[in-house]
Length: 373
Image (tube, rainbow, N blue to C red):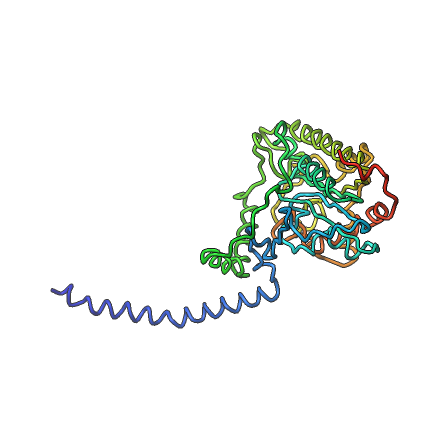
């Protein structure tokens, strides 16, 4: 009987406690809104986290009829055409179509009337894919120069896909327009657009790497990732795996060079460096990559490979460092990423390539360039 008698008083106490929490909740909500607005104003990239078939870094993907990103230039026989080959670092993960280095190169650095570019790039692309893409494009369009942007993932893919037939780079039958976003997609976008959520996730990731919860270990059975190209030292990982991957990478680059040469198309190469190689500044290594485990300088190795193959090489790493020296601190990379460049990083790559590409497009083309195997 006494228990029943005290039940109403308990309910009243609970109700009073909940009512007492309302001011606290209101204050916390106001602070969250204020923090969201402040972060969105001062660090807008924290809320640019839409990554799906429609967006990359909240920028529209914009696929063309070939299944590649960007608008295809008109087939003007008198207009110089640059073919840019690469993977996600050229495809433009996290940046807009016009912010990528091929667009910046054409728009800002080449004084050539009606010059255009085709960016034949996709995430997780290897050099054999790029050669297949070259073959297909050169069979239908006159190409005046080719630039291939090399990176660490191409080195690891050379060994992972060894013995496999090359994958298609250009869709033979590209799919139609991407379906409109569903309610579930829109709910995901609300979270992805929150700078406050983005800041919490960024801090958690950095803390994870700092404490060792996140790591950079390589799977010996499937050694994917940029760190293999750096000669990553790890127990259970044979150092010969990296050297074998580099040897296959050089073979594939040689075949791409020969495919260009038979058509009389100049080939130019550059290396897309990892952020933690730019400087010793801790801001360039927020994923705490242990540099003492890296046995290979991939930028220098790529230079050596290109020198052996007589491929002109543009040093994008030096251009990025020069951009920092000239303009002061700039991230150069998409926030929280040590592989993909932001618009400023793409601008540095365009600057590095400009002299070689300008010379290649300004020179006479060999009659062999119009031949197709």
